[in-house]
Length: 200
Image (cartoon, rainbow, N blue to C red; front, side, top):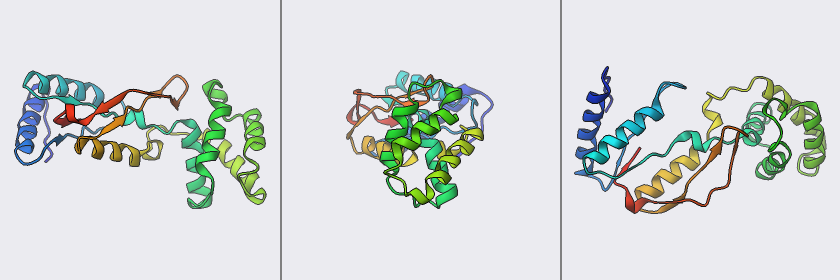
């Protein structure tokens, strides 16, 4: 169900009603909060979480921001899709090697020619020599037109898997993304689905 509200208190009350209606039929309620970049999704989700908890529910926020592939994933993924129709082999290992090279490099320098040279040396055994230079040029070109608002920036499959696991009362490792280095960072924090009846 979709509703449009001009007042946040009406929105939170309407969502409380929908959550409680859903919980009459299902073990958990899932609420999706959508909108454009910087439109207030996180603020709204936290407002709703607080309101639900004031009314006896236990809610967890799963923010898509934390499922950002990071620049070591976004740029190679775009090159793979745009230049190789998704057929490039060894993608996971290519991403891992690129991540090691650009992890601590300042944002504006991550895919500069000097980093591309290091990437070339690191991945030349993983990428067929006949397409290596095309791939490397693609990295540089995609870097110049990077758009963080595209859906391809996010690991939607992993986010969906985690929500399903929480819905089944399973446990997931909390995802963490650093905006400082634009990469996923290690996490040992575990979220237990049994503790929540609402997933935001």
